[in-house]
Length: 162
Ligand SMILES: O=C([O-])CC(=O)C(=O)O
Image 1: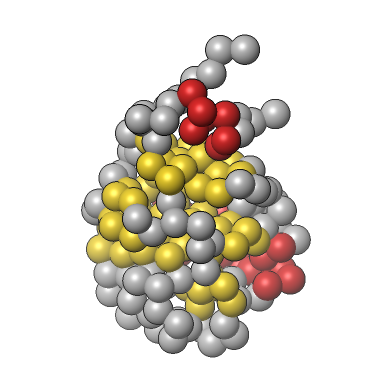
Image 2: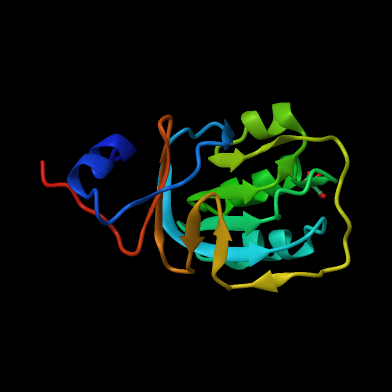
């Protein structure tokens, strides 16, 4: 069983950042954690696909899509790539599509909501940069913990002795 975000908040109140509770859970895994890799894009998911295909297994991809409601940055195909590669999960400050497919995929996905339109495919954006959204600063290599209670972020892996 994975560590609960509530327990981590109780044990490490000064070391965790609580992410704004505006994200919904998609994907089969409701609980996931791992070191983060980052991309920042606006209505274009080429770098999202590239990151899902290349970041280390176990990492959580954090996408700052600047909360754009113009289109979806992830759908069933990209979620399946993440699951097949054994990634830790995906967090998107933006929207996704293929709701049913994503919900049936063995990966954790947090995003703001759904919209049916696909994104542009020009490859614009930035990779491996610090992000700022959801009342949190997301530095590549930070550790994120996600479960049914929410999302928290720490600068290093947190351990609770049982
Ligand atoms: O390709 C896209 O833009 C997103 C998508 O529909 C998928 O991942 O299946």
